[in-house]
Length: 248
Length: 261
Image 1 (tube, each protein chain N blue to C red):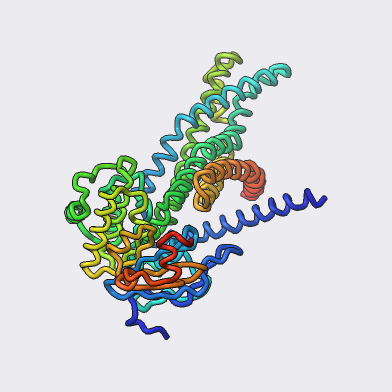
Image 2 (image 1 turned 30 degrees about the horizontal axis):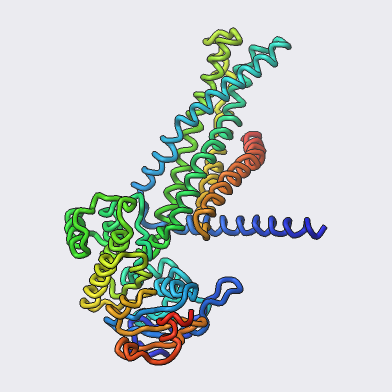
């Protein structure tokens, strides 16, 4: 029996493979309430697969995924609905519905899961767009937005249900410094509200800016894990080698 | 022999995979018919699938009716059987050509559209986003398209039947020198409700043959945009084959039912 108080998110002995390709073998870690874990590792090490598994988009072959102490691994799609209201996933490219405007994208989770009036929905969307620095973009379609704006709208949409946990899949990839900074500010602002998060990224400045601890996914498992303070002391080992570009 | 054996095994596996996948998708659709229903999405799809296909269906039906009228007329004229053109044409259109040609055209237009749209949504993670936001892609994407096909196709076929026979009448009157009143009277008196229902009944099966495989191929896209194209081609080919092969068995089935009634 795992100690539920250890983490809002707890992954225990996680195994995943695609056909004959083993991606994860015995991955275990936890994230406490309000913490932000940076998950780093080389391309193709299965960071996104692990992140997707935390919201039930992938099923582990073996192991437990505990969200607030509840194992979601054996859950079916319909059982996962309640979990997905509390665990938001910010997709790498935003994954906005391209046939809908920004307004419709943001209204989507509210119309699906709540009984708000259209007036209330409009008010909430207005506030959300202001908070994410996107006022006036309500009527735009995703195709009319820049990459950075798409990511921010995706993040704003994920936040519409006020989740307890947010999973970020490379939120700053391909962004200019200005947009990177804005995403970092959004993450920090959510963290300040007590939101627990996991950040999959290659962007080390963002890791240093927003994360409390960092885990390196290497050779199909978490090979090292440090707090940011400890990492700043440049400990010898695979993580330092990875960060310095000396190993994949 | 070994060289032939491997592709055949792969082909067989692909068919089994398809049958299993379509079976599972159908089960999911039936399971998720309960609960909330998205009427607005259904209305949008009826417009996309039905109303937007109307010009294509009308052109196909009128052309088919005209060509068949001309061919029947020229063929039967040699035996003095030109007067049988209205009856022959009406029965052929009502029982076979109306449902089959309309369904094939819809498979080409709508099947391709469904597979490519859903495939693109998979590639751009929109299907994942639907799931991650606690909603069901089956309810939001698949069911409205399946239901829209089930509603739109029978209506389109009914229109195609009328338009096809009108095309036949035009050629009958202008090329075969048949009196239009005589032609119309013959169509109405010699074709029965059984002829109509035999064709109409098939349309519900054809709608499923178009919608379910197209959704299946769209949802199973995995590796980027190239696979979207492949899925689109597969959707059209498989839907068309199912319509053509299914037509034989359904004709036989309706024939047996007719004899029993």
